[in-house]
Length: 475
Image 1 (cartoon, helix red, strand yellow):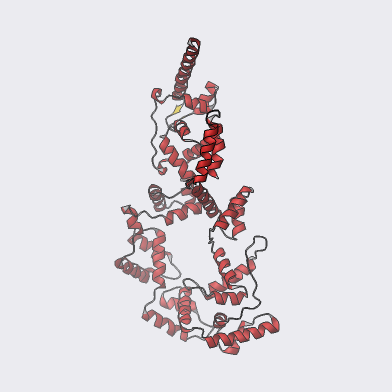
Image 2: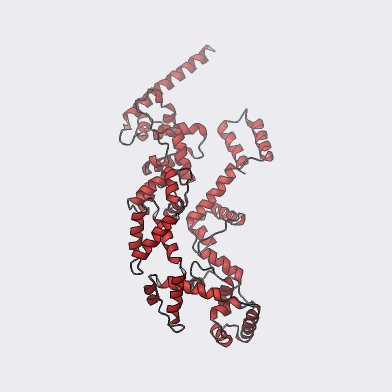
């Protein structure tokens, strides 16, 4: 017994001496400018693994102070990169008792290290990050440089989208930024548009509006200007109708009309289309007449001459397209990366842009008849071409399976959609993982884990037991 106690005392004494030596070397390797110790030099001098050196370090004997970085904006890009590399290379699946070692290496409070690493793993917009980005944007910093300064999100577009979508009702400054436009604000914007807006120089009105509303986001001001331009009073509409009536059908000079009204040619064309849509409502008789003519042409040649049908029935082509209910022989259009054709996609996009420019609602009956493709498939393909994706359980399961096969996110995005950004795939994938991790254990899982612990706890080391139990919890 005495020999065992003496051996323990000797071991403890040796460890205390090593601890003092490691702490002194860490003090000598401390870099005031970085606020960190050069632990690589300490490990070389001690000829010991990094983790063991960190365990031996005694903060109570150290001469340098631990940094406090409670906000993500307090972290430099280099520090975040170092933190991510340290956790992935040295710890892997890090546990709660290992975070103090991370704090020692970074010379940062362990709670702050945990917060920063969580933000890097599951990035989200915070109030302090939003305010920092707002300051950068007001200083005309490009998004590329902002992303390099705050490299939390997987790509620049992910950071930008999170910034514009962020809202924090409790913050008074953000309330001012995101608050609704008052009637007085709207009147002021209207005055600025009337005074400074010119189709050939659209930036001047934006500059004046930014000076008038310095606390508002640029995108919010742009949206308000667009909204104002889309609003027409009765006098403007009457003037538009009169100017269009002076031209022959098909020979309208929209640029000249726009100049006369102080609006762009596209806006005038759009408004006139809205008025046209309001005048035509396909009746049952219209639909039957057009459908009979379409069926007749289909049975004769399987190709639709919409110009000929329109002339024969004394209607416009769009009116015929919107009225037809004959759907026999329409093709399917299901997205697959190997068979997808941009020629067909651009044909549909051009038709929609020419006939239903924003904010007009798209008539997918007309789109389906023009493309001669099933209407539901047209709706789904148009949604994909806008970069939209319905993240159903089947889609998530497909992403998970492709990741298991080793496919990169960019290629997975192409498997799902022709224009889907890989950042959305990343967000969906990690959102799925986060929901699985945070989901409460079922009674069956708890019972199974208890059985494993009761069976192996006494004779199996903790690290091996954790490896045995964790797959049961993660399942």
